[in-house]
Length: 248
Image (cartoon, rainbow, N blue to C red):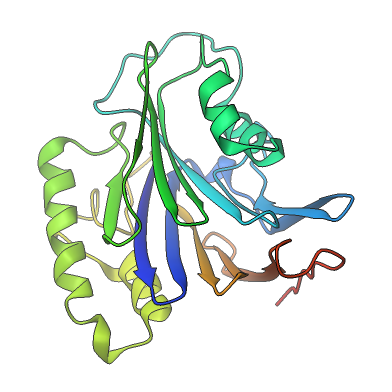
C-alpha cells in the first residue's frame, strides 16, 4: 500500500516512496547487510521481516507496492510475504535471471519498480501472470497502490504530480519531491499523497533514494517517531572495498 515517484536527473534518478500501512508495520531505521564486498541497505518490516525498498552496491535499487492493476480479493494465506520477494531480488546476482526464473506462485499481487544501469523496469504480478516492461529512464512517473486507490483517485494523483514537477526547476529536485510526498493534495485526507484513514492505513514513513553518478543517498523518515536515518553507498563499479552507513 504505497505511493512511489520516479524522476530522472542528469546523472541518475530520484526514487521516493511513501509507505501507506498500518502503524504496526513501521521500521524505525535502516538496516545494512554485507556479503563480502557487496552491501545492501533497506528498512526492515517489523512484522514480516521483509522490506519495501532497498539500495545495493551492485548498482541496483528497487521498491514495492501492494497490488497489481486492480484491487484483488485476498486469500487467507500466501506462501511468502511480498517484502521477502523484494529482498530475494536484492540477494540475486543477476536481475534478468531473477525476473525470468523466480517462482511467484501463491504470492499476493504486487508491483515492483527496479532501477539499474540505464533501465527502469516495472514488474507486475497479478496472482496468475507476470508482466515485465522496460519503461525507459527519461519519463517522470508516479505509481499508487491498487489496493488503496481506485482508477479515478490514481488519475487525480497523477495530475497533481505533473503539476508539481512543472515547477521543479526553481528548487532542489530531491527536496521538492520529498515535499510533494508530504503535502501533495487532492483535497481528501483519505487519498492525499500523505494519506490518513481513521482506524486504517496511513503514511507511516517516507524513503528517498537519490542515485547520482554511481553514488546512492538514502533518506528514511519514520513519521510515527519523527526520526530520520541517512545512508550513503557507492556502487561496486566505483569502489568495492568500502560501504558507509551514516546515521543522523
